[in-house]
Image (cartoon, rainbow, N blue to C red; front, side):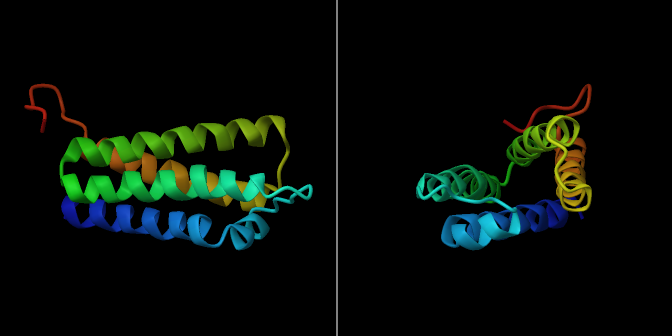
Length: 125
């Protein structure tokens, strides 16, 4: 069951990442981002919300190691941390930012809790 949920979480991550990687204008619109006449914003979306997530998720699937899936969870924990800080400091639309935060927190919690070795367990490396 854990393996199935790990792979599902990683494939969901790949899907999210591919949107930003291949369709940054669409991703920008979905995230209420605007450009100031520069394409640098699209470059940043392709890199940080696209390629980074796609490659980490594919690496977790390829490695097939619980620690790799836990690291994907830590990536989501970082995203959730930034999102929650934004909710406090930036006052984004609560519904949209809250939904993204909830997804990031849920994926982080699952991937970390299900895959980190417990005390006395032998690490998977």
